[in-house]
Image 1 (cartoon, rainbow, N blue to C red):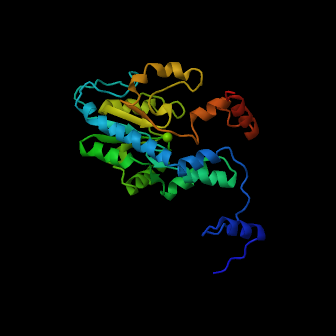
Image 2: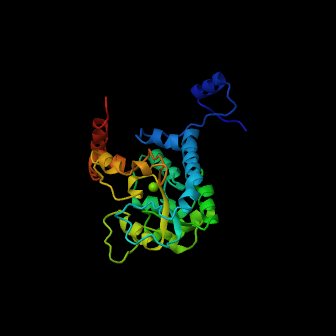
Image 3: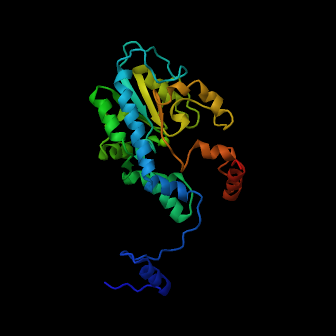
Length: 282
Ligand SMILES: [Mg+2]
């Protein structure tokens, strides 16, 4: 097969001596998320951090299992006593066990921003891959009689496609109750926004939680979103990092980003961009 290439590209291909031929693509507008998405998809360091974190958690899991006082819920979420409760691990889903970077890549390519319709369309494809180490860790937990519970801010209308995606990649799903999505109704507890406290409290009534894993501080307990307040609120839990709570990296989105423009997503993109630049240290 012969390809007709513009003279410039042909010269580049010859000079580079490369076997593959560069394919001209439509101009993709500059996007502040390009590096973060490229890193998460292509840097082996990204995969190694996930593997390292899950291996670290797994290496301590049986110690936690064998200590009847071991619990990874903050006291505000521990609403039922530990005694005799069966063990569980609690995991977030997106960017914790499932890799949604293709969705982020599509946003970069199209120049668009997150919206619920396109997000749900991506979720309904059920094609997210498992992140490195997640399947081995959760299977290890399940094989030792430890329930695997997913608390996610995916809406409950996505529960079937989410469970299907989890199963496709080999993540253990014991049943529908293993997934506590955004609209989960918890008796006697009013969910505020996407806060996961009510769902953690529900888990606390049925399980002793050995570990929590997530890519957002809100996956672990109810923390302030204000950037300046977070370190102090987190300080008392620092001994739990790497023992009861395992934090995974997400440079592409999260509360860390919206905190830079005070959660004003309705503000023009350029204004939010300016606030992010102003938040940097120089
Ligand atoms: Mg997440």
